[in-house]
Length: 121
Image (tube, rainbow, N blue to C red; front, side, top):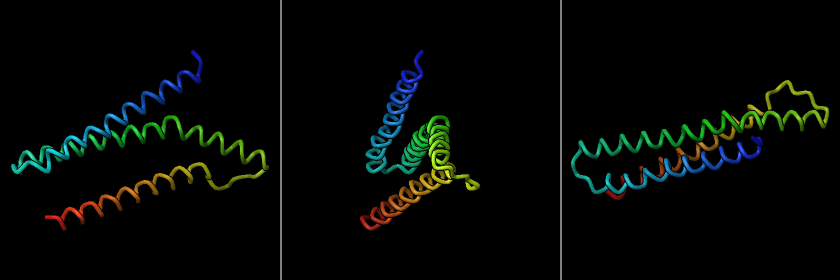
């Protein structure tokens, strides 16, 4: 098989799985808001948490298994073209910085959402 076809198929499959796992929690949010039974609300929140973890796991799996080696390869090619020796792990820093940036933005949005939800109660 052609490597481009395999990568393209994996990309499409990862997109579909990530989209589905990220969209399913939207349906549970409606149930959480309209449920007055604390036990059922807790169950819905647990399911929502698990689905969010699955979506995050697909994202992390894509990053670690496919994107990170490509980033390392391209950074090595770029640095070798300009004859730069790298005592500092540039590719690893870029990936970790991007991950921490996304994590910080996500936590900020969640904090804002919780505060606005508590104000509406």
